[in-house]
Image (tube, rainbow, N blue to C red):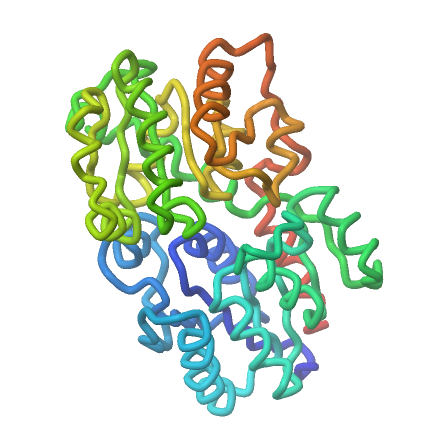
Length: 370
């Protein structure tokens, strides 16, 4: 693969969920003299709230390459990433490409590398929702199928890969690398004035995120979610950092008037990593359709209601933190009430979600140069 003692690795980030995953990996790589780590930012998320502030909060170094692909349809975005990333690979000729998560950039860069016969390592491999309507599920399966090294966050991910016929030699159970960032930066949130800025106190509010097309692109569905949330906002304050897609659809679908009836629901701009973590750690409840927040809630010990019918992270349900509510208003109301009451659930932290996943990943990678 590489000259003895030398290993050039290109690491890829694209969307907001990638940044907390790549940050600890880059930090661990910097401690290994035999590894040269380069960072490519595809620009899938490119504005300040969705990208730059994460680089600042997580102290991610400036990318060596910024592809600037921007938004577009799935096909347009994937194609632009592949065209631009191919140029980087032809220039640098790395020994390995590391991709994380399940955004379009993950799949696009993995495909591009493999077609140039460059090995690929996928961090957060093996997660499955079994929902083929989710673009992320397609990205996960394609990426896992062509990757040479598969770093899994949980034992169920190992089993998924084995059932799909993946060689056990490719699979490395390392734990959840995103929790590395959470545990590193959690103490720093105590110094921030986030709660004061939004006028809330620990335990007297919930946080909500909503961005998936299945929830925000359909008027009936989005109206039903808002209706259910409005009911609870009369007795429970809810902070909603509004994703650009959700804000756009609220206006296009003419649903903004419904928000006037939700007295305790406060819409705020998207937040950086540290501010969002500060809010979530002290929240009474987290409502989300994000995969990453299901995991964060589990480690923070905060009950989570997931506004989806399925999850690629079933371990969060098994750990007692997460409830699947889908987007049916009655199910949301039931799950919300159940989560607030607790129903005797005890939340446990899954195996190897201990803040050392990046070290284990880089330990495996560094052996490639020996």
